[in-house]
Image: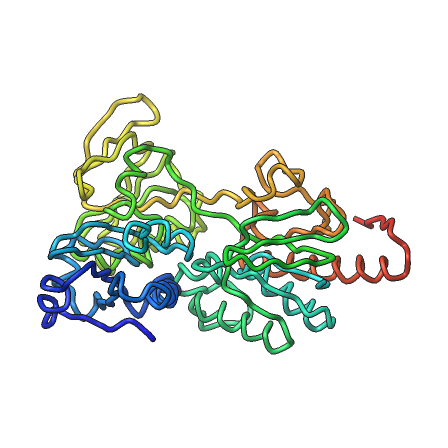
Length: 107
Length: 317
């Protein structure tokens, strides 16, 4: 199961109004490390069903959101809760490191 | 137990994989979970690797190397080495996923990682306007004023690449001349968006959730000055990735893994090293690839000698 995509059009419903924590994975086609992190996030989502929702946002297609959330480096992962950014993870990391960063949500 | 495990997936690792696979040694390549492909994944066009008169994109070259290795039977796993036990005849490796592997030989080809300036502000603003990879992050600095720190080929390449996005790119150089190759220097000098700041180093980086300016220190007279910036790319070189072996293998004065003469033999029999983790001077994709071949051939000879009972190999370096 790969993470669903979100976009400027569906952002409000998908992320801001969502119930529970939502991790948005900011990525781009030309970003190698992003493509390596995506499957790791999918694994984490699969192993922690119901605890956190993972969505992908393509920054090429949605530059407005990239700018709004001051993204200056990808991969960048932002966990939203009740519409606010609660956690930010910048840069590609392996599964153990990401799980550690997201420990509070995966407990 | 395997014959050989290759740690690293840059040109050195994959070339070693091609040769050991073709020798029937069934190599396992630990390719890294997020940095597979090594330094060339972060560059655009590679124009100096022989055989490509039209140039080739770094990631594409690494993809071809990986395919070539897999074609001959190399197994590539996208994981990281968490722990390494080189003390016995049987070398043991523990991966991030928990997977454990054993082999008679190890080829250590982990390359080098970008060098940092060493400022606290650099750590704090990492990913928030401070970057070490122009191809990765340049996209986010469209129409901005940014700077690249460094005077070598990487710095020239990054600065030139960044002019595709930024309005202005300063290049902050410690001395009054560049280390870069003539052709790369000329490209940067000819670029109207690039301005050189000589005899300067970054003393501090300012900004809360984004970079707003840097303090420059003149390397000749020590005077300080402020330079408003919206991004800073650090391209001051690389340090060899030896953290897993620095207490196990002998290192050189430059911090790279010490090898005997022109072989890949390290201070531990059965452990061989190749690529930028060994070479502090040349650090090219093709020199790394060549050292991968050397390591593969050294592994072959070592294994053959062990099988023949001649444990005590003398290198003809």
